[in-house]
Each structure stands twice: as structure tokens, then as C-alpha cells.
Length: 332
View 1 (tube, rainbow, N blue to C red):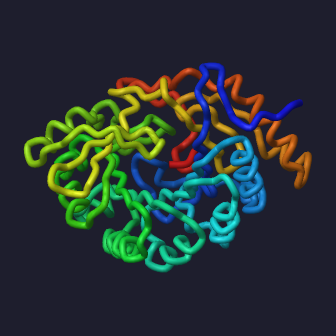
View 2 (tube, one colour):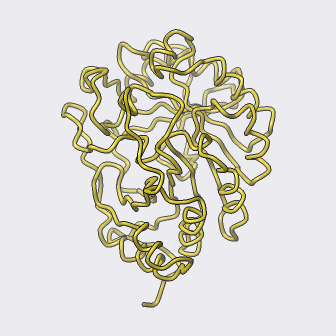
């Protein structure tokens, strides 16, 4: 098979962005992400750090320019820094980025920066300590705020907060969260909850709070200027007038962004997931372990998988979850 230098799916979309989940484990138990009593995958089912680096290398050789490491909480995985260091040296990779809950950044921000991480997204859904503990079940807000401060002082190219907004849980804080981002000189994106995994903490349809509602709330206090800026992800950005802060909206329900999808995901157990909201996937772990250290069969499998990348997801906020896997396995 003649292996191409670019990944093009059957809808003529070029894949340049891969999100790789390095672990399903997390030190939080956020109510929209996982059940309170989770059973985590046996370690033997997870890709090793060396296997994850091989996957990253294969994608970069196929034209991917951006890799985001996610979890669970990626920074709780033992020795994960070696993966960042390995990926950070790949020729052709323009952006190595991270999504984290911020709990480990006080000690990890500088080593991550030195490893080549360009940007960090930090999950922050509330600025109220008691509410934070309720939404994360076990987390402490102060640790995350200290982590944000450490990341800012380290000097990453860009830091962005990610906030999942739920009606009657934290929708009343959107203005405060934007003001916090402005005060810190960083960006923020608001995310509509995605129906992944069965949860019993709230009714997803009743808790749904759309990007349009959030933007309407914000426009009472801020002037939002539409922007054409992009980080090659799904956020639609606005500039906050007279500040350096951008506000993004990730709207899988209210403003579907599938037509321009340039992304695929690799789950923590090595499944190449062609769409967050569909079950189309390919087992990369099987290929890797059948051909140890051989990148060619891995690249061939990835190229062939483009044929089954669907046109879009099937998320509907008024229906029960159609996807049984939890977000911590998929990668945030």
C-alpha cells in the first residue's frame, strides 16, 4: 500500500488534529464526566507510553500538526512526562497541547513547558468552593486556582479555561467566569454538555444550557466581538472588547460543527475513534501489538480508517445518552 502524507476522509476533510487519551483515571469525579463509583480499565488494556508515542509519530508522519493529550486526568499517569518529551521532539508537529483539571499544575507546569507543550486548557466550571466540590465530588478549588496561577507564571503561549455549563448547577456563574478570565489575562470556552455515558446526577435534557443562552447572559455585561480566530478546534470565538480575552463556544447541539471536522481521537485503550458522537472505531492496540515497533502497519490502518469516518455526530439534548462510553475513557 502506498501510504499518503495526508489524511483525507471520504467527505474531503483533512485530518490535522488528534486527541489522545493517556488514562481513564482521574483525581476528580465530575458529575457530567463519569459515575461516582467508577470501575477503571485494567492497566494491561491501556496503551503503554511507548505505544502512545508511536501512535503520535504515525499521525504526524500522516500530516497531523496538532496533538492534544487528555484523560481522565492525563497528569495523574505515572511517568507521563516522558510521553510529552517524546512527542515534543517530533518533526512536523506544530502544536503539542494539553487538557487538564489543573490539580497537578503547581508541580507540573514548568516541566510540561520545557517538554514543548504550547498551550493548556484547564477545566473550571465554578468559582465557588462548595459548588466546586459538589460538581467534582472530591476536588478542591484552591488547588486548581494555584495551578492556574502556576501555568500563567510559566509562560505558555496560551491558557484557556473550559467550563461545562449546566442549568441550575452553574449557569448563574458565566459572567463571573469570564471576568475571572479577563482578570487573569487568559481565554475561556463554554461547552454544551455531551451525552456520553449513563449518569444519574441530573437529567441532561433539563440541565441543558445552550451557547446562545450563555452568550445572551454575557452580553448584559460585556461587548462580544465575533472573531475569525481559531485554534483548529471546534470553538467559535468572540473577543471581549477592551481586553485580551477571547470567549469560545463549543456547541455540539445548538450549532453543529461537523462539516469542518478535522479531528479524530485515540481512546486510552487504543481505539481510533472517528467521531466523538458515533461508535465508528478501529482497534490500533491490536495492530501495534501484532507488529511491535513497526510503524508501517499502524499508518496503513489509520489511513484505511478514514473511509469510515462519519459525516457527523448524533447528539440530541432531549434524548438519553446514545453513547455508553464515559468521557474519561474517550478523552476530554
